Image 1 (cartoon, rainbow, N blue to C red):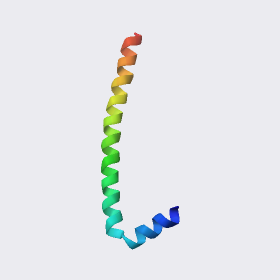
Image 2 (image 1 turned 120 degrees about the vertical axis):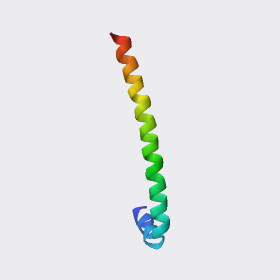
Image 3 (image 1 turned 90 degrees about the vertical axis):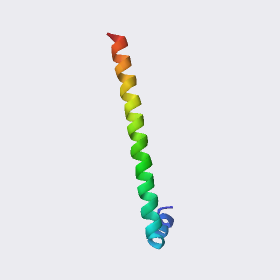
Amino acid sequence: MWGTIRGFIRRHRVLSTVAGAVFLGLFSGFGKVFGQYFAEEVLAWITMRF
């Protein structure tokens, strides 16, 4: 599996860089949204408890 991915990256450096940047952007965006939602849920739970 990793060998195939490494071979692909070696052959398509530019494509891999672009894909990596897009993936990182999506992932950080998802993390931000998810983190915000999670923080709100935790805060709501804490305020309901006390």
